Image (cartoon, rainbow, N blue to C red):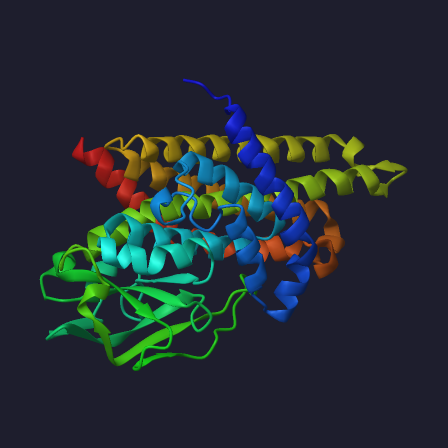
Length: 379
């Protein structure tokens, strides 16, 4: 076991940190207030290879490992969680097309996705199918050389803003084995979007329903074989859970850094509050919990890279722990700021709001416990 990053990984980490500090952090508060997702940031990220991090090189991907991507997303999230989370979703959807799509489909979409000419959204959840994702009811019916899709997806990040929608739809009634995956372009007739949801956090990115009403797409826009879509969706989510855990790592690190700086400056009872043992113990616990989360995320990413049989359970463990712990660290940082932590100008309350949803999406943390326990009981 080697816990030391390679020289290349350190350079990747430094590059991502510099990008987050220069392009994300200075604008995070403004984007949150204005509810604005800045496409130019994605284009700049593409120039560094961040829009196809673990996609193959053939069509413009960077072909880095899941551990490498974890290093990138963690550092980007220090700057802004909301933009970084959208990048992770785009990377997951792009990887799915590149990994499971035909050569023609890959050539058609992946070069534009890795260059950020197109941004992709991932469409699995439905109004009646959340944790029980296999119960989805969106249908795709074959009609000659086309498929006609009908149904509604909900809580879709980037809905109405993204250019490409990777949609899981039912092609038969055979449960999870009856789900297939499709790529739908934004301007396709029959594709529309619901009203933008008003949310607690992730305000920079739009969230809305994706609605398909007799939405006709060419059959070649199916990803892989009929019936394999749920398997593809779950494969994407293993990496997605690592990615969202990384967003929690970055957000928690930003909150901890702010708390350390603030407690060194703030004086009460004649001395800096960092001089009080209560403050020191709190900071020590926050740092310890963050480091434990980081080790779990990195290890799960490494297991995914090495295709170990229990990687899925490890991803679920890491996601559950890092997102729960990250939210606690951010909340503790707000508490150390006192009343000032509740004000938007200090940035802590935005981190708390942005990180709360991490315990819900990419599979709720309750579902993570189901995955973990099933893995244990199978052994």
